[in-house]
Image 1: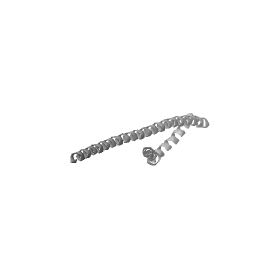
Image 2: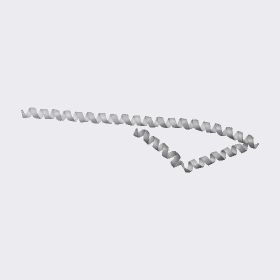
Image 3: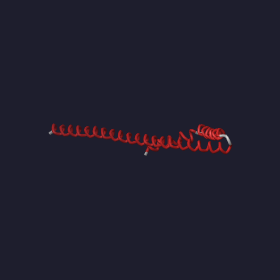
Image 4: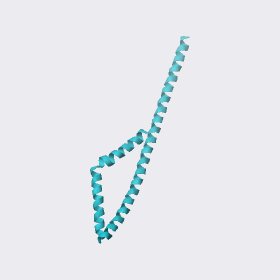
Amino acid sequence: MAASIQTNMKEEEDNIIDRVEQYVKTSSELYALKLTDKIATVVSSMITQLLIGTLAIIVLFMVSMGLAFWIGDLMGNNYMGFLIIGGVIGIVTLILYVKRQKLIRKPVMDNIISEILK
C-alpha cells in the first residue's frame, strides 16, 4: 500500500513538473509573439511617418520653388526670391534645431512608447 501511495505521489509530481514546463514554454512563446507584434507595429509606424515626411518635403520643395519664382518676378530678380525663401527656410530650420527636443524628439519618443504599451 505504501508503495502504491509513493507511486501515485511520484506520478503527481511528474504531472506537475510537466504542467509547469508546458506553462513556461507557452508563456515564453506568448511573450515572443507579443514582442513581435510590438516591433512590427513600431516599424510600420516609423515607415509610415517616413513616407509622409518624404512627401511633405517634396511638397515644401515645390511650394518653395514656386514662391521663390513668384517673389523674384515681383522684385525683378529671380535670385532675390530664392534668397528670401532660403532665408525663411533657414530661420525655420534654426528654430526647429533649437527646439528639437520639444518639437521633434519628445513627440517621436512618446509615439513609439505609446505604440509599444498598447
